[in-house]
Image 1 (cartoon, rainbow, N blue to C red):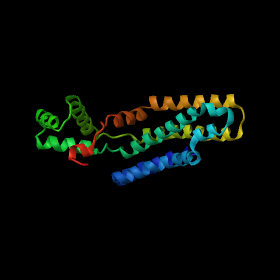
Image 2: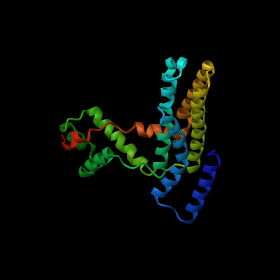
Image 3: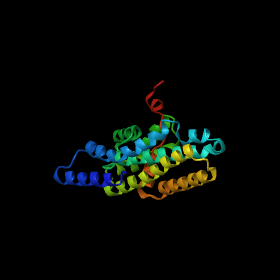
Image 4: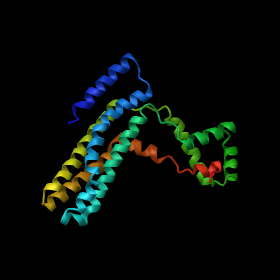
Length: 225
């Protein structure tokens, strides 16, 4: 069980910070240690093809294999968002696009009208340019935003509960022939995962911040082939 691990690591984390504030990379590594057991749990299922593969190989459950695929995907979303929270605990680093926009604006003394003119010449639409300008504003604001470690720990603990449900369901699919019970457990797990992803404030924050990064063709702007 991971239940005591986050508390112990968190206590050590806070004691260390009180004495000598660790660099951002060390903080990320400490945070990552909380997630490592969850990744290992997921890998025990993924290395055999995930729940989808178990559904496919389980007779009457095969026609419901899309449900297993959904859970596999959502479990990955949980882990990816938790990793993101750890990486950005002390701020969200600029993406390549954010660096590009910021550099262009700096050359134009932050003149957005001139920036728009230049981007239009480069083939960008006004709508795309506005998206970029809104994005760089958010990116600059998020560079210095911080997250509370105790709330990340709470999210990890909830994620652990869901991973245990994931592992338990996989074990039952291998050993049980009660298809109605397995489908009910599948449905309940999906609902629990959806609630966590859509209602936990830090899970929602991770989604919103990553969703706001626009698509950018690097080669298009720098003349690649």
